[in-house]
Image (cartoon, rainbow, N blue to C red; front, side):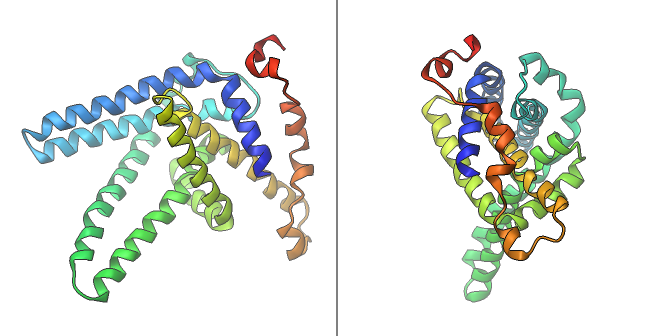
Length: 261
């Protein structure tokens, strides 16, 4: 399943490269702009700088959430345009803002509390620092699924966050793989100056990952009497057969010129 996921996600991104590039550039401009404005505001007040950074952070979250529905369409073998991304803003701004607020607060708390606890003498401080650290790690691994859950299942933010933890605890290995794959995409994005895969490519990867993973739950629902051994050996080859046919074999020609096929 993982091998097919990597193949499908790559070709989905390649076939819709322009749909990823333009939003990526604008989101990256928002990130850079927020950094510089916050840096200037720091000369006036630390509180003002943090406020500016928080506003831009939430704005970036909204822009990324707006691509969620686009990613769901691409993962479902459809095409999207730059206008589709813009049209999504009115429907996602609230969830995007609050998710940005939540992640911003967690990041700030982690940055403050972990060093504070480590400065305490004895095992109590070390234990509390480790507790906060692993809590944040769990949140990072679970939050990968929040946006895909919302865009695929049309859940609100509260339900999406709740289900993201359910998905993580039921699929810890795959969640860890997705996190490592995300790090790879980040490194690749830096190498390509954040043009691609970048923010939208990572959203697409998470969406593709969840979309394929949900086949597991469809299979379990139709096989309620499956034994524990059968549940550990999900027939992925059978479940992704239709998607595999839709992706199809790729020649060098349709890899370089997919629109000519």
